[in-house]
Amino acid sequence: MKTPLLKKIFVCILLLSSIYNSFGQDVALSKNAHISILTCGTGNESYSLFGHTAIRVSDIDNNLDVVYNYGAFDFDTPNFVMQFVKGDLNYFIVNNRYADFINQYTYEKRDVYEQELNIPLALKQELFNNLAQSMLSDERLYNYKFIDNNCTSKVVDVINKTLQAKIITKKADTDLTYRTILYPYFDNHFYEKLGTSILFGRKVDQMGTKIFLPFELLKSLKLIQYQNHPLCGETKAILVFEKEIPTSWWNNYYSYLLLLGFVILINKKAIDFIYLSTITLFGLLFVFLGFYSSHHELGYNYNTLLFNPTLLILFYFWRTKNTKWIYKLAGFNILMMVLYFFLILNKAHLLLVTPILVTNMFVLVRLAVRNKKRIPIII
Image 1 (cartoon, rainbow, N blue to C red):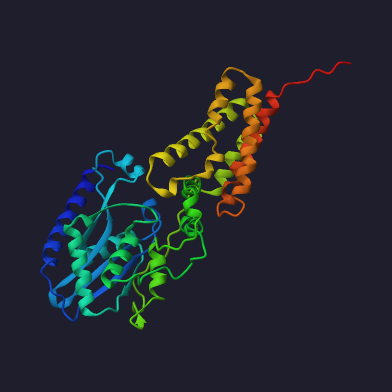
Image 2 (image 1 turned 90 degrees about the horizontal axis):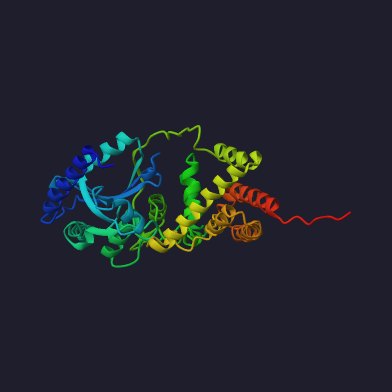
């Protein structure tokens, strides 16, 4: 990721930010000023699967048309990956010209929708000042959290702060869990869906009462009233592209079933060993992330019952050929599979993880049968 091109882009963004920010501090918006919420469509890259939210400030009298973005970060941050996993990576607000912003989304072929805020000029000025101030204060930096603190929630926060009330709240899909809300965004991205399903724990099974995704904000803004009139005008489509559906010979449900079917049907000790080793490594990863990361979505992950770290002990007895304890631990993990099944009966990812559950059962039962003490029969 640390390419010269990315470094140049990052430097350019910072330069543009400093120019617009110093300019924005002295601007008194005119009666022709407009402030709107921009909702950007989803893409096929992992970073763009959920879309993006930004704020546009335009004022023809001041020759001003700028977009504020919460969600920039520096690839050159020391220990970038570990800080991201830990939840300590600093994200920050940047601004750039509206024309550059639109050019970028045109290049990426992603939709952009605009909703203008129907608020008095004094509040537009205050919101603009709050955005400009954020560029110079400690508010510029924040620790990214998938649900609680992201590009969309930061936009909600700054507008509510300006309006001095919790005006923007979620108005749609509050009876769905966060996990259920996320699922449609993974269409045609099977392993991304599977990965988040097993990586996320109990928090995403809570009801999705917070606005955390761009299109959730767009839907809610259509329904919110402020001072006895709609907070936003009609949604205007700035860019609209035909959705490109990605195709992949491997990133699909069929390759998933084929791989697990191979493990079940081959019935070889070496294959079972490799499979259970992989399951164990995932389980150890989930336990590590649960304790190490401050991302609440990764905590209390009951999927560790499916990817059980106690299999690590089983491997010791496998190596020492202790059939008695292999049998006992295989039986224990079978019980954990049964418990896991009842835990996820009402969860959105039941069908998604069932093939792994079935494969685990087949492999563990085979392991138990192979190591069950045989009772001699005397004739």
